[in-house]
Length: 61
Image (cartoon, helix red, strand yellow):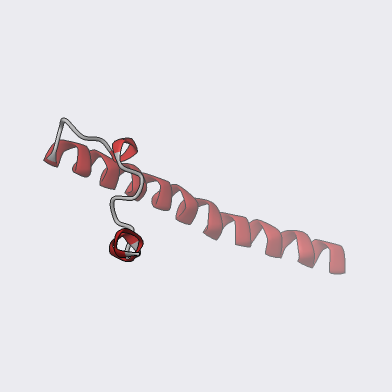
């Protein structure tokens, strides 16, 4: 009976986790598309440190 309970709980966990992972990947792709459309000449890969909060500190020393 413990094995059956474990299997059922794993199935329920997977049923909750898999759509969340899919939604996160979809949202990431939408953000990438939005950034590319805003500035079509520049993609996310062009500047990997675009949103780096420590960039100003590195330049100043």
